[in-house]
Length: 155
Image 1 (cartoon, rainbow, N blue to C red):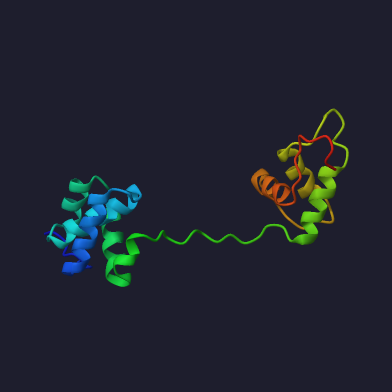
Image 2 (image 1 turned 90 degrees about the vertical axis):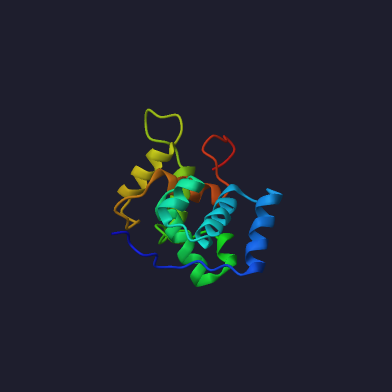
């Protein structure tokens, strides 16, 4: 027995005409146009599976679009889901240690520091209390402070 739709899309005449005008113009991002198509098909009474086949997306995507429309209205098709918020790995003091390390002489046998080397040596420092750090975090901190590993004049 098919599951009933949890969120029912009921577009007003103005909302429907706005979505159709959006599709006719074709100047919006593809994902916004896909959401508009999903809402129009859902308003016609199609199930998530039928909408997904008609539009060419996953049924879960259709369910999320329905839910966002019911909760937030038509403005929901333009917004993205909130990006994940990460806790900072390094504080200002730790960043200063990283910059100082990057400005120092590289390890013996190396002509310059690499992001991976900096990450390994920073974890090994007794002054910094972190268990691990990715080379990407190292790259972002160096970029934030305008430091490049390839510039001979930096440091």
